[in-house]
Length: 411
Image (cartoon, rainbow, N blue to C red):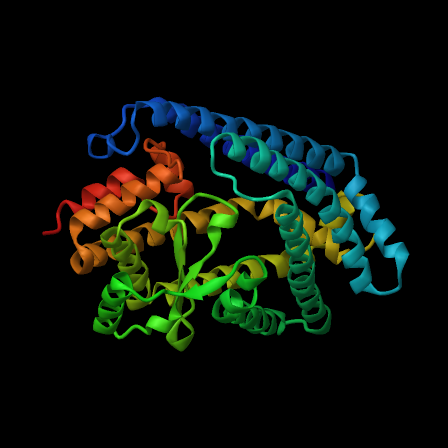
């Protein structure tokens, strides 16, 4: 049984990575397919050549990183290094919580170094050469330090919370852990923008002027509080454009990147804002929270069954159960389940994006919304010809040609 379990875990890891590579290769090859007619004006000839080169570099560096990560994890898994690390962590302290922190602290440190190297190269080589990067090196290092601290506090704290509940409760683990983790998720959704975003960026209210007056009129017509709409100084890090919506009820927020003002006219910005307000009107954040709750319940159930399966630890040479090692193995084995859940959530999300586009077209005009989508696609170097299977698996937003095409049906 132990041998079967050992090779099953290794096989799942290898097959899922192979599947990931296969789908990414499909998507990479699809880059050179003919561009759909309704979005052929997104790039001019020179910009399209630039996009091909840019996306090609991103894919190459992504494959290199995947290959390194895969090889390292596979070697450490099959040679028993992960198991030995679990034993070493157990010897460092009599506290099971410190044992978990040591185990994942070492892994996070090694993974963080690799991530830092690739992120640095992407930012100051790829993004720099193609005109996207506006980040200074001091800002880059500051961002990475803050991200590290937040990840350690939030990630480590959540991990220890689940471990504490697992050790203190038996049959009640699922209910108690579900309530506790969902409370954390809800808190982050409600207050994350207010608490954490200012650590990286400055948020300011929309300035006075014609655009604000038009936005106020739109917001009032939908009973949306204008004071919840902020502009973020994204331009100090990147030239890319974006806007996002978070929270619900009186805690809802819409954040617009200041880079929108550089490349969009007032009609297009109003359309983007209308799209984000639509997510509030359609209660999309609450729906996402509901899906998160369902996903969490499934994952906690599987985790509970997995952690209590003693034969798994023996299969990798451990005589005693180790919460940290069990969570590591679980993160490998659960990958197919997580992918299946994300496919469903992405399908729901794409549908929500179509609805938000339609709302924006109704409130701000079809042409401004179509134009805004094209500006976003061009400025962010979007893939105009993604492979349909890759879209099905990973896209939370529909491809640009589908969104523009769907708007054609609106008068």
